Image (cartoon, rainbow, N blue to C red; front, side, top):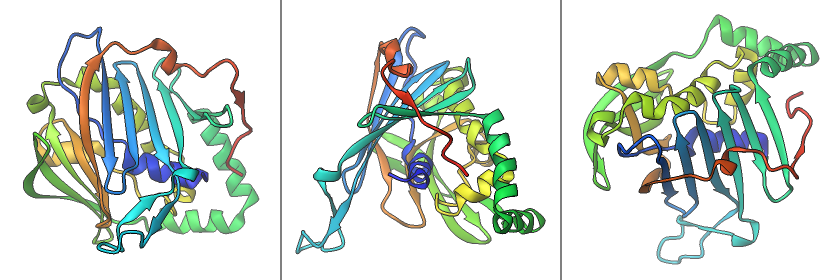
Length: 266
């Protein structure tokens, strides 16, 4: 799976909903898209783990619905992302190959400088993007519900065209506080603060500008979380189950037998 695919998955696969429970319990949320790819999010106040299924999709197998894709189980894989607030570091794991990549803000800044120097075309595109950045707007739509969660629909427009659309529920309706989601929100902010040249490179094939939860909260007037997410009218991903339980601390660590990979950006 390419790195841009990873970021596309990150952009659309991370959908989080939970209910208030004692701080000792973790939250495990599973989601699925219309094809059947599943994701799981393990959440504690100071750390996050995201497991995302990936693989090929074939079309036409269902004669009654030829546009409906089916997963090619032979290419099925699971990628893992871990975020630690104590380190402000993202770890991208490839379990099948027992490899991982470490991403920090400092490394991103160094890579941004190297990219701009190595690729003058990318640098020029970044400069033009900085001079005339896309106009990003959030608009509130009518309310809806997914599963048992009522939610408000919000669309992200990029230069006037719909990009992300999410149906978000208020934390109070979910029995949550902002403290419960501290690590998850810091994880989202990690990507929102990418150096501009890195952001430009990644966003070309990763769904465009990322969803900014702060703008959605401002528009709705309350802290919120998505229960359904889609991009550019494509079939979306919806929360399937929520469970409160103790989470094995080892899930938030890189296994000792994994090898660190070189930087994946130019």
